[in-house]
Amino acid sequence: MIETDRLLLRPLVIGDFESYKTVWVNRPMTDGSPGHPQLSEEDIWYRLLRWIGHWATFDFGPFAIVDRISGAVIGEVGLAHFHRGHGVPYDGFPEAMWRVEYSRHGRGIATEAMQTVFVWFDARKISTRTVCMIDTWNDTSKSVAARLDFKMFKATTYRGNPVELFERVSNSLRQNDSE
Image (cartoon, rainbow, N blue to C red; front, top):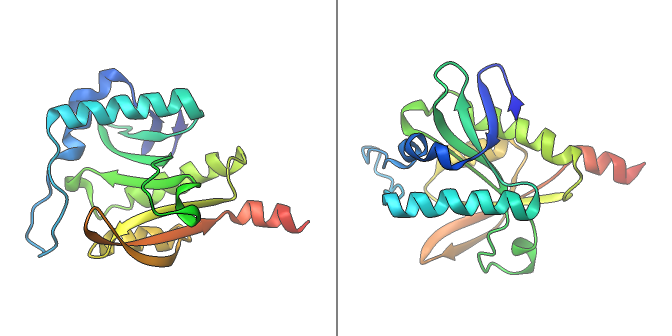
């Protein structure tokens, strides 16, 4: 478990299912962006099982973001292997991900959580490079990515939707490489 002033970050467990479902409630479509489709309970269950399995296989993966005051799961952040089919410059590297319950957007939770995850991840020297994929319309996630030192390196499509691919090279690992 990793702690910040506001958050606890820990691997998801089966008991998180009910609280985790709230993370996947579809956001309002008032800003003109396409948003993400709401997941069915079955898809949410499969996603939860996938993350538990990822931790068991790779010893890292998505963390539950837990609000320290309420104890509720309010999002997920972390790194995982997705193998999305983008090729060598993308698929061979851990992919960063973040999602925060819509009612908690705009509070810096995703950035705070991912910065904390990167400190943990970089200390383990798992990979000098991480990647992420963001829908072209998702300016909020692009802002988070910029605060995390991600740089866009390719525009492409994923499942028929336009996306941008980003990369991040760990500052601490760059320093170690140059010494």
